[in-house]
Length: 206
Image (cartoon, rainbow, N blue to C red):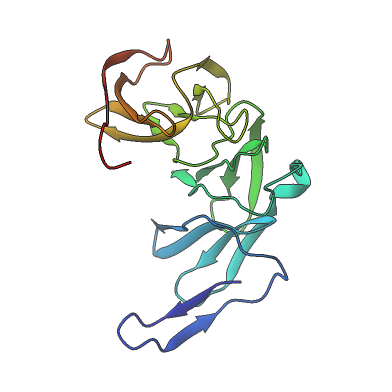
């Protein structure tokens, strides 16, 4: 399921056990917890947590058993969003987003809540001050900009702006880029509304 190699020599350091699953498209995230380095990732059917020292799979969570999407179920392109022992997973294609809670020893996980509103297709998801922001999936070329409360999954807003796209944060603000028209917007990180402060269109390089 996962392999570690020496970046200088290419030598194999470890191989995890096989879960007999297909690969996903997301980039894994490396987190430090106590004296452990943990790798959180999403493969075809599972969310997994792997000990970076030796490849031991601490836990696996059957994502597609919660809700198996009609299409795109093996893609899972969005890197997990981790705060403390909580992990938000989203993958587009009308597949539910889920909040997972790791146990104190990191050896198990449970689902805290799920959402049918924020299913990020591509472009990532961010969190600021207890809220999650991203663009959801309504079709291959369309989606709305959305805010959820981190603790509960409650939807604070779902608003249209050009098209779905990618999102990052900088200095407490959101920077959003729509994937069709090429507009970039600077947006206030508020759960009240999708509050655009300024925007411009990228005219070159498409």
